[in-house]
Image (cartoon, rainbow over all chains, first blue to last red; front, side):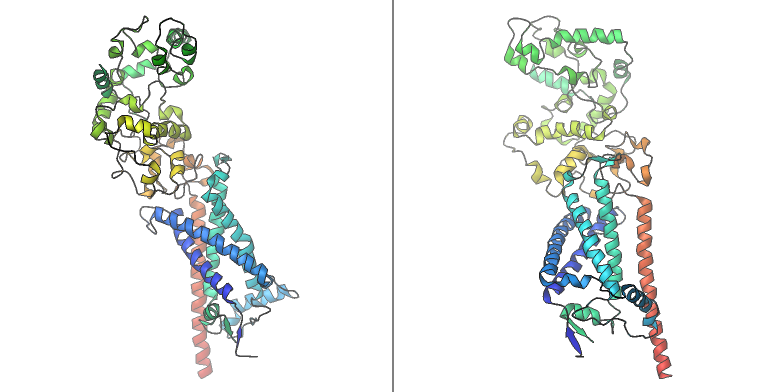
Length: 204
Length: 327
């Protein structure tokens, strides 16, 4: 096997880092708005709203690019866990994170062109990209155009369920972001996976 | 005569669109319990006035020789009047001397009761506040209580109850001039053109959405303590509130303003803070769920420290392995 393999084409890397910048921007400005308090100044409220609105629209564009790119290139197949032994591989992967990596066991999965993600990554990424992202983007759009929300619901403003969906999906995505950044350090070296995400080359 | 009329009106206080202090005894008595018989008598008397001062009166004048062009400007909506704060008053309570016969006496208008005749206590307070208002600076000779508070229409905020109705009523007053070149020109100094309302609020995100859900006076009046009425000192754009978190935070200033009549009904429905506000408006920063927020912050803390512990464990395990390998 060659020392290194080219796994990530430029469009995926460009989309990934654009997405990363947008999600972080939206996370910081979203928290500034949701937890707005005179004693807790993150980003000034009206500025945070403007940045959040612009970054939100950009995220819709970036997501559309991601979906179209996946369809056109067939990359969507990477997000589908492949049988047989999905459950077995999930257990193995979890065991490695919880124990194997502490005792120096080799990574149970080696990224390849055919199967870039380990099975846990595939399942998690699929849920994030195809379940949570549509929820946060659609609820964000309704937030931008609140006239499309119901006037009232159960005695509350009809925007409440939209806001709740937006808030909860944002929470899940930001919790994923924390774990995602940390798990990025679990390559052969701390920087290996970050480097791959920049250059596209996986160093075996 | 017009200036005298204006002067009279200039001292009037307090038809209190903006929730004024407790009414003086006179005004309170005016709205005291009235028997159905008395009310019927008042309505019968008012019907005589409305026979002419109504759309029907203009279309089918009951008397000959009326100036229909002028009458057209003096039409009153009976339904709106009987829903207003002055609904139990007879027209002649204010339009008294000189109005009994037609044509009305030439000086009848000069004898019209002023706001302060009934609302004297409120007027004293309002006058002081109004003296500092942007409207008093250049427009004191043109500006009166009734410029904003139409005594035939206005309803106290506390009596309207529904925040959306309060907002609609009150903002109609401000936007009536500030969103209309024609009305603005009636009051503005010569050569002063009306600034476009959207332009001067361009810094405010979701501008028009704000005007639908909160009043102009939430930002264009000084801060008020809980239970205090909103001031009649209207701020210009330099002095107006621009700090969003004054309202957009858990301890929102709206609780002492638009929602001040409802705060005592706050029950934190389904665990939401400021659920009285949430009933009509979801407001970021205000209508939070403290328990959900706390659980989410705990989840973030647990994830962060969990990952930190995992990372530390890896570092420690790495050194132990290295020592073993070299040992």
